[in-house]
Image 1 (cartoon, rainbow, N blue to C red):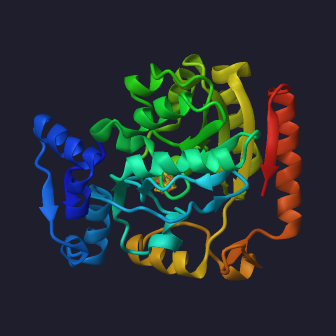
Image 2 (image 1 turned 45 degrees about the vertical axis):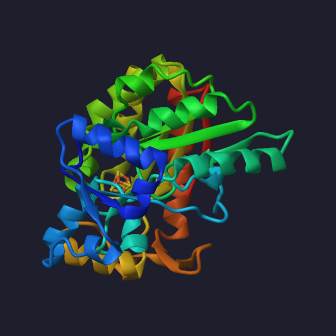
Length: 334
Ligand code: SF4
């Protein structure tokens, strides 16, 4: 279990799901707390670094009814507003920009409202299918063990002929996810990296072997499964390390992988500041002078590798993936 503290905002206990979750946590021998308002929740600990770790292990159950779902291209049509934050401690995490030093992990107990809204979006887009991303601002799988909510959502999507669910994760599925009647309406992408990157930067996440074994289980459970290689770091030996990784995937997952996505490392100024505060010993390569500054679609800039390096990355991954996985599709390299 990735959480050791559960805090319910009062509004969550007005929802049917919130009430059920509260009782089920008590039945599991846990001690959920109830707080009056957000300010009471957001003062867990004063020391910044300690607070960061505490926040990551604290699941806050709130309730919100977003008036509209955010766009989520290119991974899906819309974000599904169920989770925010993640108990993993990846030093480079994209959530560093969005959540800064307040990494509270939240679950929206108003799941009935969210699932009702899904139907509205699907109907508006008929006869096409409409896809929803569960991992837009979180890694959803750590939420499953205490709450059962991921398998619940997968089962719900199975009954929606024109709805598709997308999940990207570094974590392991439990038995309920593996035996869910997904009806081919949910697909998974496993976020994978070299053992060196995982050991150095992806704290509190499963090892490469455990992720590959999780991907194998998901493939065997009949889910469409892709691999996300991210973030790619271009250190001196990167070609050798990523070639070995792709060979390892080939020997363990074979033809079970449908798609690949490759994302090179990038960071924002805000993320760099947070990372340096939380991980003062970090070895992450964040030398602005060696990067190109690029404006992103959300109105802030990122430091990315220069165009020549990106060209080499594209050539390398298209060649290695087509050699080892001729039947899989490489969706993009950025
Ligand atoms: S697993 Fe993903 S969402 Fe969680 S900390 Fe790592 S990068 Fe961030």
